[in-house]
Length: 257
Ligand code: CAA
Image 1 (spheres, rainbow, N blue to C red):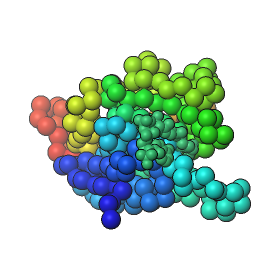
Image 2: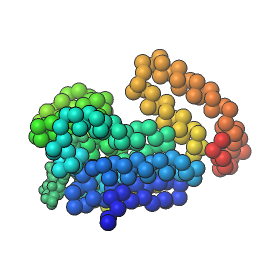
Image 3: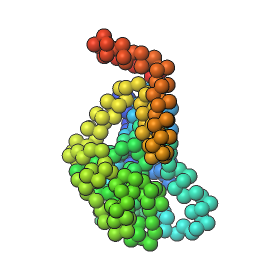
């Protein structure tokens, strides 16, 4: 049987690849459980400092699997806790997760990318929330994360008209961090992920936690959270090492503690 989720380790980076090309990487339970298991494994691996989630050249993921969902009734969706049960493992990862998006990121695919900490897009990427065409609505965070990323006007436009947004528009509106030529997407994303993973792991996690807090709190609460995390960084051996290395004009040797 084909494995619908593949993993590779590149130095200190864990790569997760969605592998259902025949269905444009549509997300069913096997795929989502596979992604969650891969995140679990990379989170537990001390050697890994950053995770990359990608799909194929044609599709990051064309949404939740429509065949899988089509006969759901309300009680089934409610009792099985559809989406909440297994889709949000990426959200709870403590190590940074970068989505490397080439081709379609639609519906649940766009939502899965938005659960990551940042999106690097190939120039071929297309983002959208076309659920309205299916008689349903975004249900994996699209109505909440999209307005936070691109503002209410564009989020309403995408969710209500089902139109797709290309990579240039996605970058201009703040959904993606970088646009990269398609043939270089994975290489450049892995390079950025290696850069991150080369820093001190507790500091990487503190920064991720603090930036994420900006979306969950008032400015003053967020600033307080940041300040406490910053203060706690002075307890790290890696802070002593990083600053000593700067003064001594040498490369720091971080020990992740
Ligand atoms: N679920 C299941 N199968 C899918 C799929 C999906 N979301 N998206 C594509 N596929 C399948 C197609 O059925 C097709 O399979 P067959 O070859 O067996 O017919 C195969 O992938 C290739 O797709 P197309 O032939 O349609 O490829 P295309 O290049 O002509 O079109 C596309 C590409 C515009 C992305 C089109 O496939 C499409 O519109 N897909 C559906 C997108 C969508 O509506 N996504 C939202 C899903 S609902 C959701 O995600 C809910 C949520 O918020 C959690």
